[in-house]
Image 1 (tube, rainbow, N blue to C red):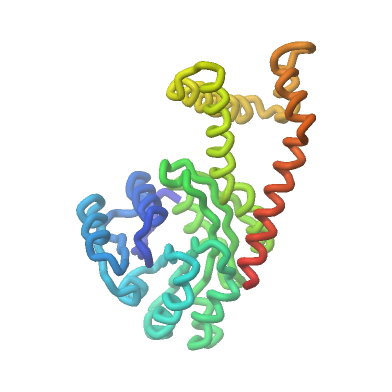
Image 2 (image 1 turned 180 degrees about the horizontal axis):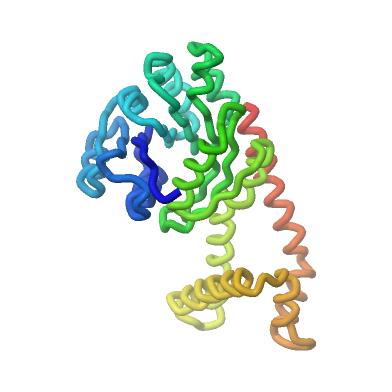
Length: 284
């Protein structure tokens, strides 16, 4: 899909919304004049209008009415109130298909449906498909990794539109909604794990006498290079690890310590803990 012939509305104008606005404009997916954003902060809306040339409104309902694709980009704790406000203009706001995309973490599709579908009959529900998305913060650098899942009314064309928007800020994989807790644990929270590792490596380099700036550069370039090697060779990470690990060498010395302290097992346990917490938040 090269171009979306639709108005896109962002309910909420935080960092992730801006990343998506930036991405869809840079990719040529949508003209700025067809993009709307709403927020309670007048200064924030003015800044987005000045930077990107988009249209803005302080009323969520106005953006909801104007757009054929509505992206819910508010914090999870505000979703109930925001959805109640949007439901107040239904069904009159449905003049055609209106795709709703939510990026609110831990807020399942059934909760969105519980707010938006009561005023609608069966035919009208078919005009309001819902796609839930779990993005991550590297989207701010157009290097995001997202998972998405559609509800029963989301057709293939709806999923393709959501995919096009998400691919403007990185990559996306379609999942069953029940798998989004695992996606949250892997890629949603994942950047924090990577930053944690970088902190440790920089501290290690400093203790070995390196400048922190040099230690950071060594760490970042090594991470990027390793990721690129994984992508380009297609080899399993275990095989690439073995190719770096010589018998009795420096890498083996480091890996022996990691194995002694069960680093891999603890990492797996940590990701499982994140998935469990995501599940708890979704069901709360």
